[in-house]
Length: 123
Ligand SMILES: [Zn+2]
Ligand SMILES: [Zn+2]
Image (cartoon, rainbow, N blue to C red):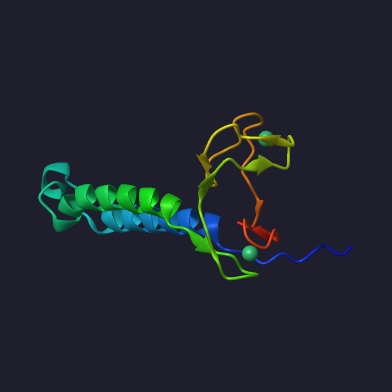
C-alpha cells in the first residue's frame, strides 16, 4: 500500500503546540503550587494563570489568521476562504477559517489546495 506523500504546512500543528503548552503550564502550576488554597492564590504561579490564558487566547486567534506558505510554490495562502470539503464534497458557502470544521459534515480539513499552483498539501 503506497500513499501519496503530501507536503505539510503544519497548520493544525500550531494549535496542538498551543494545547500542549497550556497542559504543561497547568501541570507546572498544580505541581509546584502550594497545597493550601489560600496560600496558593498568593503564589506567582497563580498570578501567571490569568495572563497566560489571555495570551493563549490571543495566540489562538493569531494562529488562525496568520497565512502559511505553500510547500510547493512558496507563495502565501490565506487561512480564510470558501473552502471545499473533500468529505461531503461541498463548498462552505461563505468565508471560513481552515481550522474550522465543515458546516455540513463537521469534519476537520486534513488537506487543502494552493490558490496559486493548485497543488494539494496537508494542513
Ligand atoms: Zn463536509
Ligand atoms: Zn502553491
